Amino acid sequence: MKNQNTNQKYAARLLLDAREAAQALSICERTLRGLVARGELAVVRIGRRCVRYPVEVLERWIAQQSQNGGA
Image 1: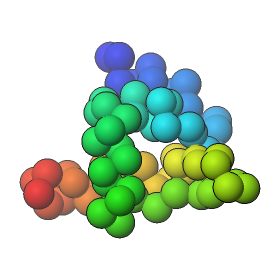
Image 2 (image 1 turned 60 degrees about the horizontal axis):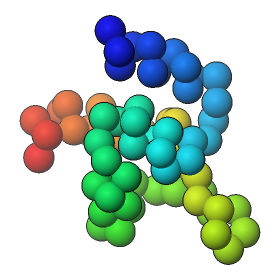
Image 3 (image 1 turned 135 degrees about the vertical axis):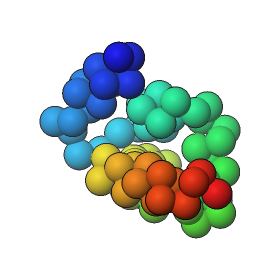
Image 4 (image 1 turned 180 degrees about the horizontal axis):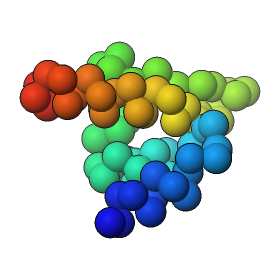
């Protein structure tokens, strides 16, 4: 139930910050950064320091993990 509430909370937004994206995926921010570094997740960079995570990309990543059995 917690994940459903989290997904509903962020559904209206297009971009999340690192804390929100990690929370939405139920992973830590370090794991999130690793996914980005390996090219598994695309980000939107706004200026030099602002990094945002598109909700659509997070949803697509979840679907891919489901299809691949998490591998």
